[in-house]
Image (cartoon, rainbow, N blue to C red; front, side):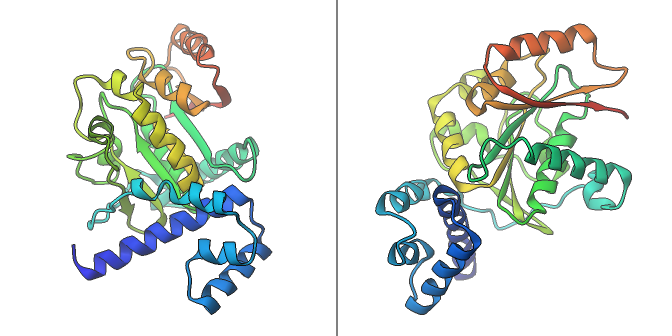
Length: 287
């Protein structure tokens, strides 16, 4: 790893830790300005400056730095969103405005302003536009200027690496299996968005998504990002999405007009109730 990449990694890690401390301590804009001024005048890190001015405790800083060993090694090659993602291709298109409106509705349903907004996008069947919606929502959230993570937790037929032109030889599946920090991809033109692909398709996807190591990752991401969006496998065939929903606790349901059987939608909602997840809303896709 060369010096230029080392510098970029330190900068990215510092930004994520700063954002985590701001969320943990619910720091106001005025407080952030005070800390930043102290950071520059003293030549110390943001967290040390927060301690110096008394706006964070040692416990706060220790909690935030506790995730540092799990911070991602960002791959040198940036990925690029595909033109099929309308929000990138044509931000003034009616579809793009609909995605932004959905983003606003979801922001109004946040549990608490100082907590990360984490949600699972799930649907009953394949071919309903679930992966596209997850990708475009992640893009929309990142355009608010806060750190956003898009996770492909569909370990059956993953698609996010296709939408972003990424390799998929490393990702979520092997990170859980090996208990190592996953590789996030930075996204070209979207400096606040990171992509975690599914990785190689494993022989035991449901077991991996139920593993305590995955639960630990999710808890760390809650402190490291402002928004985390999960793409998942269809509920009709697999229980994977239900496992993710159980850990995350917040779900956006999707179905496709004139495509999704009513019985499958009812079945998904019935099974989802057992996870005790909060359903943030339902989207009907027309295409």
